Structure formats: C-alpha cells, structure tokens
Image 1 (spheres, one colour):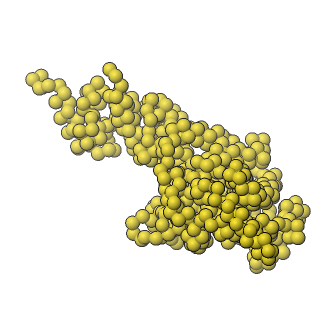
Image 2 (cartoon, helix red, strand yellow; image 1 turned 135 degrees about the horizontal axis):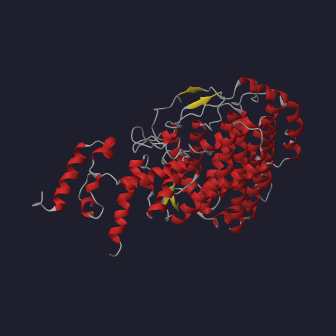
Image 3 (cartoon, chains in turn red, cyan; image 1 turned 180 degrees about the vertical axis):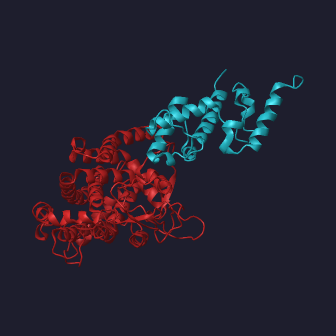
Amino acid sequence: MALRFTPTTMQSSEMYRSLALPQTANLRSPKFTMASTLGSSTPKVESTKKPFSPPREVHLQVTHSMPPQKIEIFKSIEGWAEENILVHLKPVEKCWQPQDFLPDPASDGFEEQVRELRARAKEIPDEYFVVLVGDMITEEALPTYQTMLNTLDGVRDETGASPTPWAIWTRAWTAEENRHGDLLHQYLYLSGRVDMRQIQKTIQYLIGSGMDPRTENSPYLGFIYTSFQERATFVSHGNTARHAKEHGDLKLAQICGIIAADEKRHETAYTKIAEKLFEIDPDGTVLAFADMMKKKISMPAHLMYDGKDDNLFDHFSAVAQRLGVYTAKDYADILEFLVGRWKVADLTGLSSEGRKAQDYVCGLPLRIRRLEERAAARAKEGPNIPFSWIFDRQVKL
Amino acid sequence: MAAVPVTCVRLTTSMHTTQIVGRTSTMKLVPMGRVKSGFPSLRTSRFQISCSAKPETLNKVCEVVKTQLALASDSVVEPDTKFAALGADSLDTVEIVMTLEEEFGISVEEENSQNITTVQEAADLIEKLVEKKNASEPA
C-alpha cells in the first residue's frame, strides 16, 4: 500500500526512529529509563527468536518530565475540579447497566430473546465483528487505563480511596467505563459469532502488556491524551452504532450508541481540564499539546496479541480504517477539533518555543489530511487475513 | 582511448570508481562530468552496483529537504546525513518523499520509501525510478 498513512503506520515507523530524534529540551529535565523489556532498537514485534510472544513497547520510557513545582497547580484547582469536572459524572442510580441492553436471564422470555439476538447477529458480516471485537478488547483492558491515570503527578489516587476530586474522578470514570467492556463482552458471548476463548486470551495478553502512552507522569500530557482518546472512542463507537443499524440490528446499535454517549461526556470533562490548563499556563500546555502530537497519539490496544498474529493491531486497524469506523481522517478531524476547542490559534504571550509549538499544532491537521488523501488515492486492495477472533475466517484488510 | 568504444571506457571507469568509493565520498570521486544520463545502458539492472546520482538530482533533493525542514538556504546538507539528524520526524520524511514524487514525476512504493533516510538514498532511488519511467515510455 503505497504511502498508506494511518496513525498506526506512522506510529510504528516513528517508534523505530524515535531513538534517533534529537531531544527538544525546553523546561524539562526528564529521567530516562530503558524500558525493562528492551533491546534498544528492535522493532515492535519480536520476530524469530521466541514464538508466541506479545509485542512490547520499544521506545525509551521517560518519567516525571513535568517540573515538580507545577504539581502545585493541580492542588490549587481542586476546588474548581470539584465544581466543574465531577458534574460530568453520572450518579450511579441514574446510570444504565449492561443488563438493561441484554436478554433478561430471570425472565421466561430469556431464551427467546437470546434466539432473536443470535438471529440478528447472523446478518452482520465478519468484518464488522472483527472491529467490534477489537473495540471490546480495548475496553476490557481498563485496568491499564486506570493505572495510567494514576501515574500522573499531582492528580493520582495516592491510597486507592483518596478524597481529592481528581481521585474521585478517576475512580468514578473507571467505574463507568467498566460497564462498556462488560456489555460488549456479554453481547459477543451470546451472539455466537465469535471465538470467545481467543478473544479472552487476547484480553489477558493485552492487560499483561499494558501500554505507555508517553505521558511521562505529566498531567498536561495525560489530559491532552485522554481528551483525544475519549473523542476517538466516541467517534468509533458512533460509527459501529451506525453500521449496526445499517445491518438491521437496532439493539446492537443502541448498545454502541449508549457507550458512545458516555465517551462524549468523558470527552467534555477532559477537554475542560485541558482548557483550564491552557488558561493557567498557556505556554506549558501548548508545548505539551505539540509534544503529544509529535509522539503521535498511540492507540491503547496497540500491543494486542492473540497468540497467533504478530501484527494483530495493524490488521485490526486496517479493517477499522476500511470500514470507516476509525480512520486517519478521523485522527485529523479530532486534532482539528481540539485545536479549535482550545482556541490554540488565539493563544498569546507564548515563548518562542511555544509559538513554534502553536504553529506546529495548528498546521498539523492539514498535513495529515493531505497525506491521507494521497494514500487513499493510491491505496491498493488489501489482502484477506484470517482472524482468530472469528475462528480464523478471513476478512479483507 | 580513441580506439576503444566510448561506452566501454565509461563503463570501466564507473565500475572502477564505484568499487573503490565508499558511500561517504561519492561526490568527490565519481567523474560526474563524464557520465551522461543519455546512456541508460550503464545503469540497467544487469549492473548490481549502485551508481551514484547526478549532482542536479542531489541538489534538487537537498532543496526539498531544506524547505521541508525550514533550514537556511545556505546551509549545507551532506548527502549521507540522516534526515532525522536534521530534525525531521516521520511526517517530515513522508512529506519529503511526496514532494520528490511530484518534482520528479515518479511514484515511490511504500517498501522503498522506508529506505529513504538520507539525501543520497533519495537521489539514488529517484534516478532509478526516472530511468524506469523513461525506459517504459515510447520514444
């Protein structure tokens, strides 16, 4: 595929080259540690040495890049967070639960409801299920994401039951997200269309692998990352909902839609936090934004592995791209949205490094779009690849 | 020399220099002035050596790289310097290849674009592709 630009393609070549890039120092004096799993410049996937080994992060893992004095900022806005961020959580009593969207095992109609669910699922093509399964596996790796939020300086949950608004947010966010994986898992289980054991194995591998979104314990980087991610999941689940409807499964469309609605609410909260940071420390925040975009927003499940396919994530995302569920164009759109949402173009009083970062970020969506248009115009038809999640049936990339 | 066909002489010369010259100093030792692009037979795939690119090609590539990376126009870009060392990220590299495709009217396959990390590599690939393109067009 000539110059096929996908966030994943860019990301893997970026990973490979990241060790050769000059460091832009700025205000940071980060501590570098070699990722314990590394050989320094090996590509993401270990090819011949060990069979059945999941891929590992290859870049140097940087920690605590935010100067410690900035931790004060997050302490000082705890009151603001309580008033403005926690309001985006839904009280549990008002929340939907997975059972609301699944056949009711306590009712006499249970078996009939299951039959209907399976009949609807039969009409949905394999390629759709590949994408839905990939999304479900991503959701099921929630322990990794709660961990990631608790790596952030100044906002982490110090005890597991910390009363700070940040910690309350993180726990409640996790609790809301937990329903997503549960719902999709039970739907897929009942559908009969997919190999649950292979999927469950993939989940176990993925949680074991974790992920390093390169947020370096900095809440600046962290909240920009989560803002992007929540919008990306909102777009993605919104698209799977639309597709389900097109395939005649209105219940599945509802499932994906209700998950998407949660993601939208979470996106609102995270973008608000970042907006506050732009207000308090525009220079630091725009530098953080440019930094995250240069490093590329890596997808949470990029290390996914099922014991068989060394390029599972690439294959999954190629299908997601082809189906229009989550594409490089979406990546550019999300970036453009955030640039607008945070009024990056209007920032003033920036340092010269800050202005460079501002220019970079403002100019980036167009560059990505041009690349993607080019790649799309020249894209060749993809090969058919088996996915263990659907009993090794094949899907076109 | 006059008794020997001109192409043979050039062939010998370029083979000789390519064998002894390491990639770092191709600019200086290859007799560029004497090897003309009007003799495509010198560079067909029968000869597995990588013949170095013309100065015009190298210069053009340098210009594109300097523009992409916002380097001063009088800055010197060595043919073997890695783009990454000049401050290019992976997006810059892809855009450099795209611009070169437009400038030279060629199409670079993804597998090949991964191998373009220096001006020299870009120029060499460009010449190969331009040649292939010229060879396949009707005279």
